[in-house]
Amino acid sequence: MQFTNRSHQNPNSFLLMGIPGLEASHFWIAFPFCSMYALAVLGNMVVLLVVHSESALHQPMYLFLCMLSIIDLVLCTSIVPKLLALFWTNATEIAFEACATQMFFIHGFSAVESGVLLAMAFDRYLAICRPLHYGSLLPPEAVGKLGAAAVFRGLGLMTPLTCLLARLRYCNRVVAHSYCEHMAVVKLACGGTQPNNIYGITTATLVVGTDSICIAVSYALILRAVLGLSSKEARIKTFGTCGSHLGVILLFYTPGLFSFYTQRFGQHVPQHIHILLADLYLVVPPMLNPIIYGMKTKQIRDGALRLLKQGSAQS
Image (cartoon, rainbow, N blue to C red; front, side, top):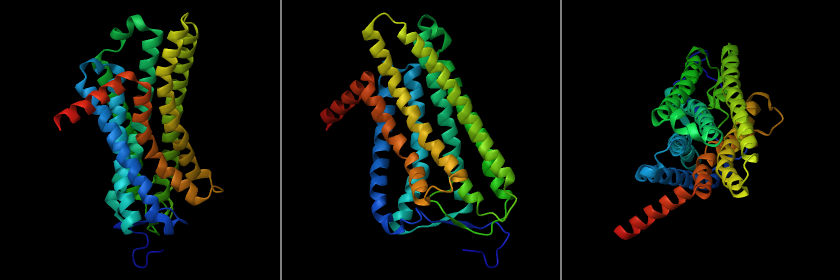
């Protein structure tokens, strides 16, 4: 769809296509997304309430878990309400400013989550490899500083990415996506998109590359320390604690990298598969993260049960 009288001008709004090729199924696709969003909100709220109500859980590992829950709530809320409106009521239009804001929250908080996962890997390294110095090396105030650093780095890097959109002139306003993904919007420009392309791929590669390498090094050191434990029970317990974190890391990075690079280089991947996976990437991890930690962490399970019993007793 080309502009008639607005060629080379910024549009007041964009039109989201949803999942191209699956438009006839939008109404039914919305139901699993709605269910996953409800589970994500419920699960992450339970984690936040449990950690808040249990003073024994006011430790770095659980404080980082709270940060992860808050970020997951922001990420899925940035996409799902508009997604459901698009699928159920065909509300395709999104204002230019709202599109830029959605893009900022999605890409910015994805970068923040990567930083928090790195901080969690550092926390596990200290707890397992430097247990005698754990309290002094990672006091509560250090947890807040690491969280703030992840926020400032993630949002700081993604602010120019969003601002670069304003310099573009658009010849099309139909976004072949179900949310305002950066490259899907940039492709609508008439030209001059090289700065957007270079900055976008450089920033994403730098953030993910640096964080994933540091996480891999942390877990290599953790693995070496665990294998050196004399007690089989201690090894199993440690593997169980780290296993949940590794599961969350893989759940976050694997589909995220696939979606990011497919948007740029995956011309042979069917568009509806790419966009469906991009949607699921922002909903499935926030839904599964509390379940993974809830199943693997006894303190979270016990706290959730206590909250449930208190609620039943009050009712």
